[in-house]
Image (cartoon, rainbow, N blue to C red):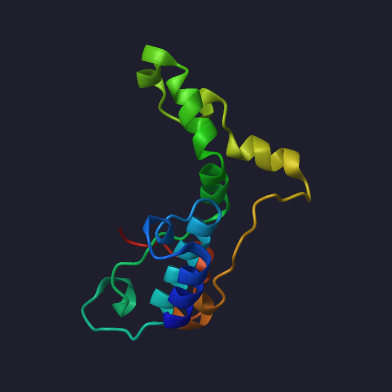
Length: 133
């Protein structure tokens, strides 16, 4: 962690910019935090098999949404008073499944596998784990 801090100070300074990440660095950071949590020493009585509360696992759909968050906000604002009727991303033209079908082998969103999840959770595949909030 100290090495990370030193590098971050060198690149970003110690002021407010130290804490601002932006996409994709923010998502990568959350994935790193999840990885560290999964490697932590377990404590009896905590949820998630003794790991306690875990940060979210950013899958492909969440990364896709995060990458487009500014466009999504703009699309909602452009609805004016009708923005209150927007309930899903699809309501404003953002359809992950449609995007995914159109991608074929092209994948503009980088996935970071959490390799230690399988062994640390006793053979459970990370895609099948439901993290408690």
